[in-house]
Image (cartoon, rainbow, N blue to C red):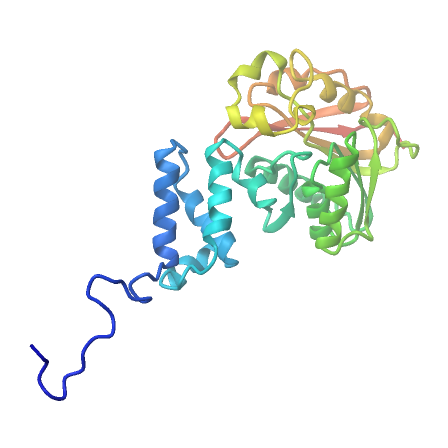
Length: 307
């Protein structure tokens, strides 16, 4: 039967979807990725938003506003990322960058992933610097990794100059790139060194900071599988009790600090009592400070040697 005069017939069969029907939005893509992660047992539902936002080239905070936008050609990228995440690779390495203290830092598997606990070390270092009334001065960052601490301190303390060391040349390459990215490469020098070994300047630093490897070999099996599989062992473990490098950092600190200069280090959550008793020469132990969860996290010393 023909349609009545003036009524147009559809050019598309009823069982064929239109382009509009096939349109996939960012919100729907988040749902798909979230479902795939959940099915694989990845306990991080927020990571679906992180991955989709990164693939779409927008901040995560824009997803709710732009959720109705077509996802476009990001599925191929997302599928590759999903496969890697489901295999256990941390999302930070998949993206190749992560936020620390309000800035984005490039990462590779030659560097540890910056963690929120380390932001507390940065905050304490800044407070120490300002409480001492310093403007110009020199800071040393031992075991810099991605350069997150050194670059952040240079950015937050624009009159300071920073020396950053690491035993890994590959990590130093990443750190230099991060210094350039954040416009502080003119005030941060990078030195390949195992602790203080390559430094020839003696007691020339007003502040020394370090997030050294501090996990005990005996605690290896307590770490999450993705940490053990993907993060550099050299940045995690330091001897049978985890204090191998910390002993050197504290024990040799007096030769690299000006009188009244301070040393602040990140430590393990059960190391407070042990680090307070480390041999320290002219350094006087100050305190162990907790992280936001109330666990031992930061320890400090002051050089009490007479000028």
